[in-house]
Each structure stands twice: as structure tokens, then as C-alpha cells.
Image (cartoon, rainbow, N blue to C red; front, side, top):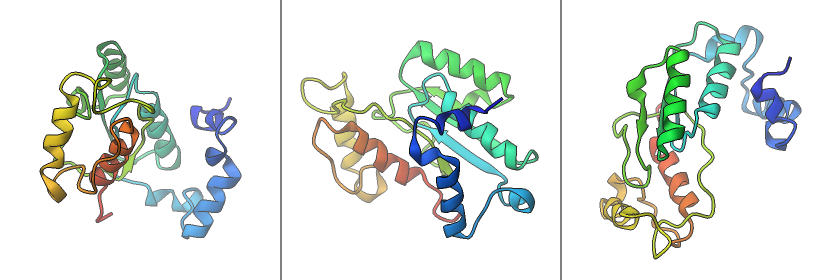
Length: 180
């Protein structure tokens, strides 16, 4: 039976096994066999976690290569129903319920001091962060964060108001642990 990660390989070429192996070989790292010990003490976030499917897939993938790895999952979700399902999934996996938050990522970072080794997300493509199509309070929150300059998540500038996915990308870069 294929894992969720392997099932994804059938519809997205970047997840295919040959592509993954080629990337691992070119980077000098292969997470299998005796190298499984290299994957350890991982912190992973999905800033638009929905029901937690990608968090679970990431967890299973890391555990597959190193069953003794300390994997801590973090997530933020704007939809209350999806958040509840994600929270239940994380509790089933024995994760800390405090690390899953009901929050619009554009309005705030629930884990401001926490840096991540892995960031997985499928941001809401085609959504507006500004103008008449933006959610209530989103534009002001984004502009307030931008005013923080390089200390904020949008230090590289604001994209057009209909390009929320680019803000997610900047937030992803901001969350990454650069000392890993």
C-alpha cells in the first residue's frame, strides 16, 4: 500500500521518486539507509494547514526515514471547521495541541520566535490581501507588518493586492531556520 506521500507523486511531478532521488544526490544528501540518522529533531509548519493532511504527510515521511526523530508540528488555519479537524488529527498523533492555532496567517504569526526546519503549505492562490476583495482587517494587518521593515514578515516588499500567495512565500522565508 502506498503512503500519502507516494500517492502525491502520481499527480505532481516534483514529488516523483526519480526527481526526489536526483535532488538528494545533487545536494550530497540521501535520506535513506544509513543516512536516516541525519533527519532528526525536526520542526515543521504549515501556515494554511486546513485539516492537517500535509502536516501528517510530512510527519510520516520524516518518521519513515528516522523513527526516533523528534518531529514537532505547527500549524495555523483560518477556517474553524478545518482547524477542529486538524487539531483532532494532531492529538491522535500525540502532538502538542498548543502548536495548532485558529488564526489568519495574514493577520498574525502565532509562533513569532519559532524558526522551522521545514515549511509545507498550499497557500490560498488567487486570494486578495488588499482592496475590496480582501478579508476584514487583512489589508491593515499586512500594512502594519510591512511597516516593521526587515523585522517583519514582508521585509522584501508588498506584491500586488491580489497576490496573497507571494505574502505566504515571504512568510515562509521569514520562518525558516537559517542556522540549520
